Length: 103
Image (cartoon, rainbow, N blue to C red; front, top):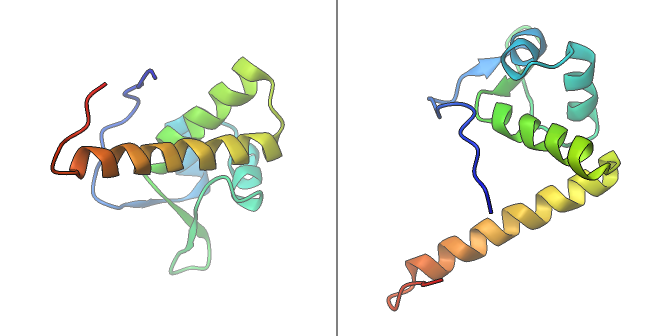
């Protein structure tokens, strides 16, 4: 599995949809659509506008790669993202075992 370093992980900072779109290189409407479909997490900000964590920029890039590279629709992208997250959790659990995890 390839890993792409797109952003440095920072403290949990909330970005507006417009700021997030600029950071991810996407149209703000596309970011809003990803939030509405549940592909990206957003929290309500103090002014009622959605705020997205900086860490979600890498997830947005992954969504774009899955759609472009594999031609998946948004439903399939959600399933693939869930499976990839679960695989990462299982690999982390294996590495945490006393015997370790070796490939």
